[in-house]
Length: 351
Ligand code: SF4
Image 1 (tube, rainbow, N blue to C red):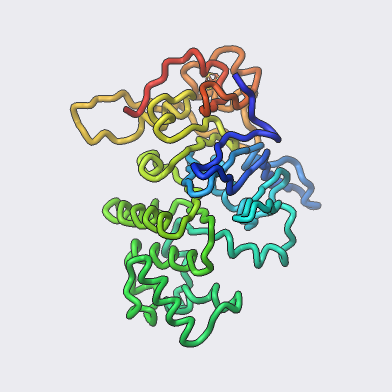
Image 2 (image 1 turned 135 degrees about the horizontal axis):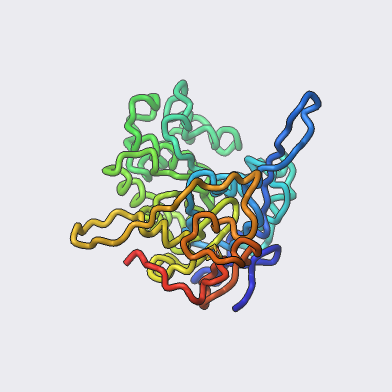
């Protein structure tokens, strides 16, 4: 088995065209816990604790896990909406130049944001209710001095058309639109600067099931049209299965399994992944697959358990699990797991 976790971890692949777009190496984001009159630091919440992965150009890379596992914090660190405690975030442009995002100053980051955009979960809270569509979608173009006046209007119309909205509505306010339409507005805004990479942070979880598929299909169509690469953050395994090429499963700030989507769903190598897969609703009522109900709560990232963080909830835990933290290792070609018994366990797939 090859061990790849840690600072030089790869946990990814290069794309079909042989190019890597983003590398994340040993990323840590610790939030200080302060107490007392002098607000002294008495501990840290380890929201992201040594995460490494690579995203290939043109791929959709999924980050999945229960709420509070650190997936959104990872996305925000990559976008530098949060300053990571340590680690490397390397962006490779079309000319083969590598930029260390974690080293950029606020001023250097501003023009760099043209390459990377974020789409937020809540389409109701993420759009300014006092601005019209024209202002919301056109704002990045105005801030970056790209166009104004008639040209701006034409570009906004083009962006709205590309996400399936009518340009005639550009003078309306967000409240006039449904949740699915608002998420389309968020996408149009994210596309305004022609980015290569989009962090989609739970983009469909606030939407009705009936409109989720439409937005997911649109996200896929836009990927093809504009050659986009996505980091897709979600807690819903069905959504991940639908849209991602490759998936990393997170638990209490760490990646516990990474593989191509079909491989991860068909041959899980970590008990936590098995439990997530068992919770996927079965469309066929005759398929009575056993649902694994995890006992207890997700551990507190300020005070995680010893050894494997999953051991208090794991049905397969043995003594070593309470003592030693398992490293993320390549158990099968291009399939990584952080479990002492990944080679031995016969886990239930989603099939
Ligand atoms: Fe379960 Fe042990 Fe594997 Fe952790 S290392 S997932 S506790 S079997």
